[in-house]
Length: 288
Image 1 (cartoon, rainbow, N blue to C red):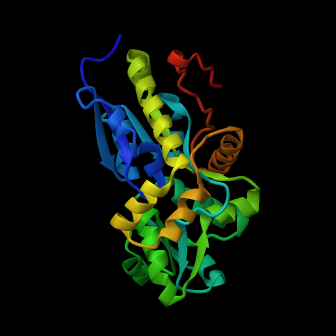
Image 2 (spheres, rainbow, N blue to C red; image 1 turned 180 degrees about the vertical axis):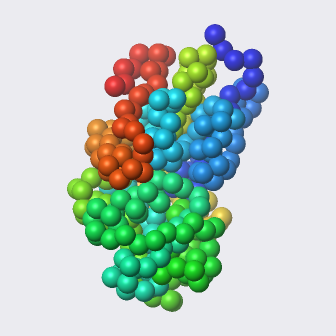
Image 3 (spheres, rainbow, N blue to C red; image 1 turned 180 degrees about the horizontal axis):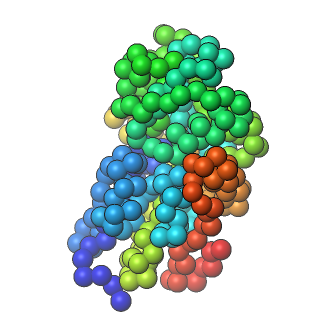
């Protein structure tokens, strides 16, 4: 058993994923594990093409190829309401946006398709869409509204305090509509890697779980890191990390299943999704 090469682990380097990875690398020996940092869309593609073995990835990208992957249990980036970093900025009144054009980030498919679901099924609207690089000013030159995610959305929300544009938090809107939280990212492993080297996958699972638990027990190191690298005030980052959730229990699974069902209903997914989990033999866990 085992692979005769290092296991490659993909890491989304947005602040919202930091708790899962902040302490993990020190538990993953470099001679056995290689950490690859990319934006979500690049990691999704790399996992699909077999260039990466395990990765944090957008929920929608997982769904596209769910039959090829196993989920690492109880790890996610979720929000039970406001997410603060999946934001639709409105240059025009919402009723005009419904008939107009929305510029969408090129960096994550989950949020893009969540927006399409909300527009079609909640608002009963059918705007046109254009995909652009995530720069708010450039996007709003071409469209009536712009969807940004991650750290780019956070910085844009700060700058918008002076501009005063209306902003819709997609996590909050989803919760108000469905009553469920929304899961934006998961951690998945290719099935053949889990079969070939389950011990290595368990090592990664334990490292990420331990990082999550340590991070959430004391947020101050992450708050300090965010203030240093991304700016902003300590109070903002404290609220930001507290409003996110990193488990993937029955409530999170139910909310994400509903998202997958709506995506399939609208033809955004070509198939229904059955979530399958990695069985951590070292802990004798059963995940269904």
